[in-house]
Image (cartoon, rainbow, N blue to C red; front, side, top):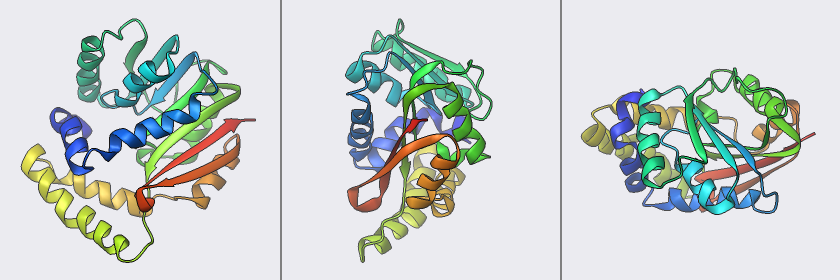
Length: 223
């Protein structure tokens, strides 16, 4: 599904979010500024938006981005080359629930709009904890559900009806954008997700809700 929408993925992200997704990513990476991570892993990297932004903002020595959608990675590699970040960022095919890296390989792990796609959420989070060094930080950016009336109703109508329509016109894959609404509805957001982080090897978990609750940043450190 993600391979099919890869050619229009970046454009649709900007259009459908009115460009706010760029600020969301920048805000999330701000959680890592004080840590100054040198070795970073970006899980479900897609077309490498977070990896590229992290390279510019945080200036680590190395970022590895993984994803199972090879077409997305191909578009990401073009963007990395155009930004002249090849020496820092490497993209590779990889399963978030079965990471190839040794224990304690990274100072920080990031995920943007990817954890709700994990087949086994706790297994994926536990893998991220495994490859983090003690004291390392995970930062997760994910959609959530607003609760404020009438914004909640407007948001649901947009995600359920308008977004799939625009997605069908531009990407020719309505299923991808219908899936977006469905996956957000069943994702364990807020306190429920913080509890799962605590169960999978993290502590000091916190959540910041953005843009009236459309999106949330989850941050935690490895015990």
